[in-house]
Image (tube, rainbow, N blue to C red; front, side):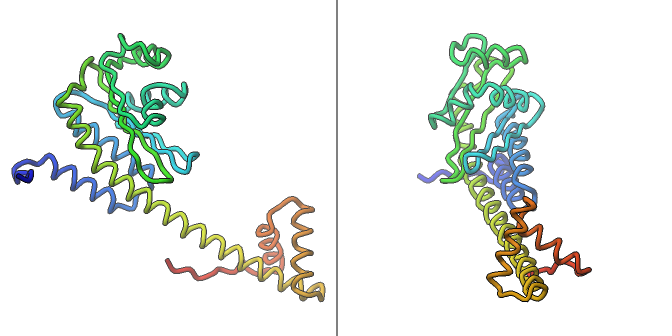
Length: 248
């Protein structure tokens, strides 16, 4: 028999509605992840106080780290500072990492010793496979030991599935927006360079190829980008830089 969700059960509806609202907003990706962490802590911590941290790595270099509160941000910072700990292990292995009692945990002792000083007692780190360009780990932190038993862990695993899908959409949307911005900048740069080439051809009475060579030589000599040099040349004639109409 297929599972159904009762109309009187607000839990899944609230998760779905909030994820849709977040995706529909025009927030930057970092703000989206920040709100996602806050929502995750509220959902999983309904019966006990839980903090949530999310680390999102894009293209192996751009990293977003967010937390639902000061405690989560502190524990995320400890992970980042040490380059080791359950979150790092979850990202590396793709496996869910559970720590039942941080005081008794023998692994990642550097992380545990610092985190315990800040009242951490248990955690669960769940890797999220986003796509070929992005990885994420969502980590839930608790100030009581054994906070992530079987019922809570099952709830975490159910919860992270829609979170993973929403992150995938958010990352893809951000990538398309960034690509559009890069195209616009490239077109604007191309336009001002083309105008500068025309000015140089007129001033030096030379061909287009010769004008390009002159501008490149001047750019290299002054150690500035060709687009910057072109803009200066256009502005020196008292003309504003040309704007390329661009429609997304």
